Image 1: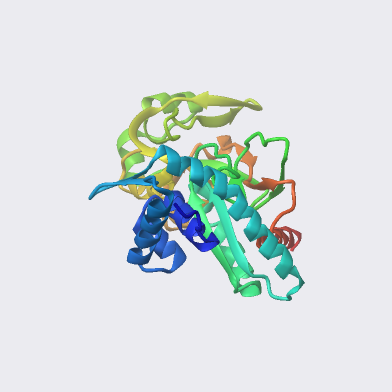
Image 2: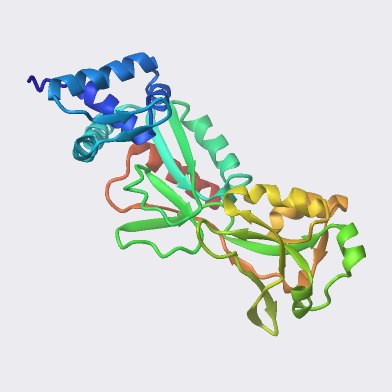
Length: 301
């Protein structure tokens, strides 16, 4: 047996495991799927053990393959970091930035930031992974994450990204309110039908309103429940008269202005802190530092 796998071969194998298949890895690496498959087969022949279990429909990592991927992952990441540090003398920022973000920041928070970022740093490849649960960004292979109101690990730092505060608003279609009546107080909501969001594998997102200077929680009838991964689809159902929706006020501006939706209990809407970018306190790669600078410049501006 000859253990003469090159770093390129190891990187290809690790990408197959990380991406979950040959075709996905080939797209990520810019290689033909046949070359990726042949590389893994060559490694398995040299090692004398299977690294992957293949069927016509799926692929799984063997115990040996999983152990190999876990061992080489940090080594490959270290090499990437070393290359990035070596290139930092160059004027042009290059490399890859991978962010793990909730769906709530996709429609309006990130697009203007990345418009500025890409104008400044056109050589940086950006990948955005949308997940709404709590995620270990280091384990997930991401440079940074964005979350609302989450308790950060001790080795994380964070900065505001997007609006410092956001107001959570209630709205419904004119047809729905004409048929059901407009609630006059928070307690009236328990008789109303609502479009609610559910966290992955968890509870429904609570509806909170301000009453007598304090924040209260109300539980309307869940006429329609959407996963938070579909958070940007809720307004379409609200326009169709399904029920009352609770969402960020800035997402409602156009619908409120043209009359497609009507505000519900606007004097009771609460405010919450905006999203934050968080990342490990250790040395940040240059593309991430460049993105942090864009976020800071946007807030200062």
